[in-house]
Image 1: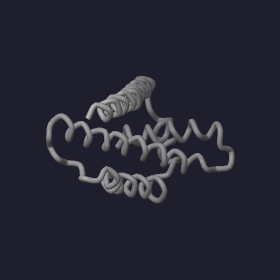
Image 2: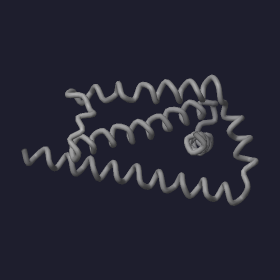
Image 3: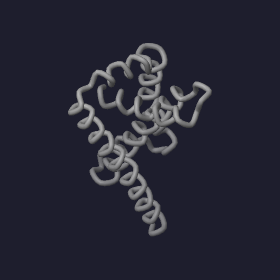
Length: 131
């Protein structure tokens, strides 16, 4: 959970620069849930397409049901149980080395997640026209 907490912390800090009305915490929760759900859906699509695991449902819109546990778990965790201020306190106590490692892991995760997801989506879209 440390990396997910740090992901939420950084997304919330990013939105705090733009949203001065206090909604930055909700935006951090939404973006963190979206990132993890995209990774789950991406994993299910790849495993169905290339490994014939049949993890995904027959209707592609039911993939959202697979994301409900992630949304509920993270939403409840960051809205009710673990606040942004608690995570901020933990991050402020990080050593310089630990903060650098966490930043590198976070940047690597984001770099791998977004472009790979977009490229794979474009690839699947181009396959749709060949069938």
